[in-house]
Amino acid sequence: MSTTTGATDEIVAHAAGAVLWRPATGDAPGVEIAVVHRPRYDDWSLPKGHLDPGETAPVTAVRELREETGFPAVLGAFLKRIEYRVARGRKAVDYFSARAGDGAFEANAEVDELRWVAPSDAARLLSYESDADVVACFDALPQQVTSLLLVRHAKAGKRESWTGDDDLRPLSDAGERQARALRTVLNTFAPDRVVSAPLLRCVQTVQGVAEELGTEVGHDDALSERNFAADPGRAVQRIVEIAVEGGTPVVCSQGGVIPHAVATLADRGGITLPQTKPDGVPAKKASVWQLSFDRVGRLVAAGYLSNPLAAPLAV
Image 1: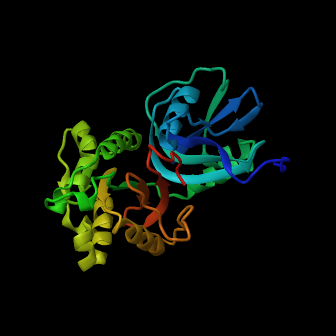
Image 2: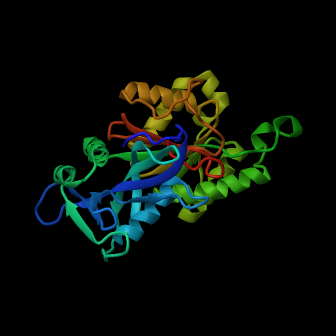
Image 3: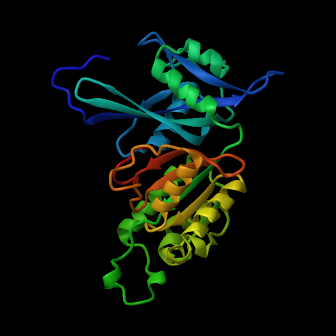
C-alpha cells in the first residue's frame, strides 16, 4: 500500500485472525483450511477482524472465526504478524493457527462464501500476498505441535512490604485482576494441565485455569528463580520435557527464568523471536510466551502475549 500523507509509524489499528483448519475430508491426506469471500471488498482472505475494546488478540481471533465462518475454534501456534500502512499510521494483524470445532457456515454481512481448500490451493485463491505468506507459515509447521503457554506470574505485593516467607507472598488486588484476565486468554488455547513454580504468587496466577479443568496445579521447583540460579539448564529442560508430553500445558514461572529459557529455546530451534526488544526477551508480569514445539521438543514457533490488562497484542 502507498504511504498516506500525515501518517505515522505508530500502530493505530489492531486486528487478529487465523488459519482455520480441519482434517481433509474423504480419503484426501493432510488438512484443508478456510478461505472466505468478503463482498464489501470482493476479495478472498483469511478470517480476521478488529479487536474490540479490552480484547486480546487470541480472544478476538476466536470470536471473529465464529462470527465469520460459523465454526468455534481452538488456537494453536502463533504464525505471524502482518503490518501495513493505513490512513493514520500502521495496522497490525496477528495470525494464529486454529483447529475448527463442529459448526456450519451461513452467509452473513461480512462473508458471503467460505471454501475449504488445501493450503496450496488457498495460496492461489487468496487476494493478498500477505495472507499467502501466513498460510506458508502454517504449512511449514510440523503436523504434531504442542503449544506450551509460559506465564510470568501476575503482580504481587511489594517485597519490601512483606514480612513473611517470600514464597508465600500473595497476589495483590491488581494481580488478581490480571489472573482473571489471563484465564480468558489462556482458555482460547484449550489448556489441559497446569504446572507452576511452587511460590504462592505463581500458583495463584494459574489456579483459576486448573479449577476450570477440575485439576490441581502441579508444582515444579525447577521453574523457580532460586533453583534457576543454581542450575539454569534444568528449567529449560523441564519446559522441554513438559512440552514433549503433548497437549497444551500452562506453565507459570518468574521473571528471572523466562527470558533466558525462551532465548535458549529459540536459539536451539533456530527461531527468530518476534519483536524482541534491545534490552532482551520481554516477560512482563502476567504476560505469556506461547511456545510451540515439535514432537522431539524443538521450538518451531513463538509468540508473546502482553499483560491482557495493559497491551492486548501478540507480538
